Image (cartoon, rainbow, N blue to C red; front, side):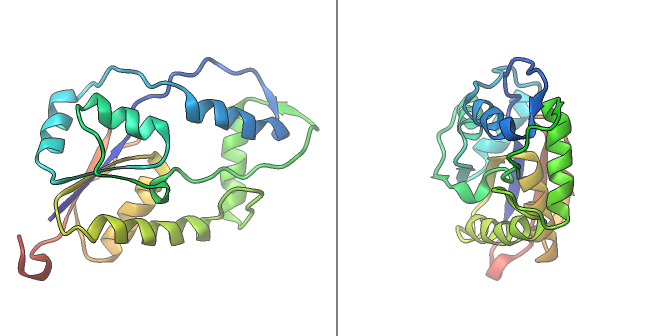
Length: 188
């Protein structure tokens, strides 16, 4: 049994000027609704992997569904449990910074337990446990077109449960990792 974790296509958003921390939520909403780049650098490889899977899964975010559609498939399951980690924020207008800087700062804060309308590290790990449960319940070769950080949490949970990493996740859009479980309940 295999699980393939794929990071979605590049999201096409215009460069955003610096924002106040209180404007990050609105910026994320724009990102969440933006179209994706139709160019797939390793398309033949990914299409072949998708065709070898009995079950295709997406998050609840449009960039995940649109990415799977670019591979020529609709999801068997679409679920918010696979969504990217919710970014914390704060209603503060003290200083403007580029959105990427705010995202890094809020991600660091979440490592120390700050939620601020988002998710802490513990929240993300808990959700990854649920996500792995959904991916493994089908007992079929499965592809998830998901998101960078959440895919990493899912990969760690798979490995914790004894899944072997055949190919490690990359960081780029369309990168993927492959995880295999030998003889799940007597199957191969």
